[in-house]
Image (cartoon, rainbow over all chains, first blue to last red):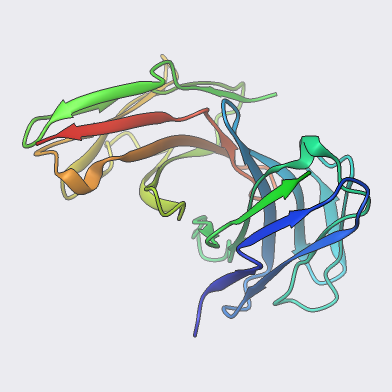
Length: 114
Length: 115
């Protein structure tokens, strides 16, 4: 199906483990983003990517790693998960051509670190 | 740095009535975009309406409209003829015209609709 998907939708992991959240979009959008949503904070940007092999930090990048070897995929890795990284993670993509600045969001991944 | 403030953590409206959600933002830029996103219990983020700062006319989308006051840096969302399906979290978001496209979000307003 066309659109933006995230996997897994739910994940429970232990402190210190590495976990990777996947994001895949079928529109060939150039821009992709990772946000985290916490109670009382709204959504905050973790990392973003303007194109394949181009990534940059957002507001809260510590403890996260991203890569973008293909335009359609933008995985987010927590190298050593901590309880403070318990959150809902959203991936988004955007074309940003022709004056279209809408971001399309995936369904989110709820991550719990025990 | 730009900031977005939603001063109403929770709001309630009677079905078929009108409700206004408030949003203020702080920026020194002249080129930017503003958005309202809806997040129902499913967690899906849904774009409700957007406003380009260079446009003086307030954006409207069916029952949703905004009151954009650029000088006051205010961007409120009005929902007319409220429906039960409007119950959700609503987030105001800012995008700089010079940024790589990332959004800066307010903390959200939880809207309840009473039948």
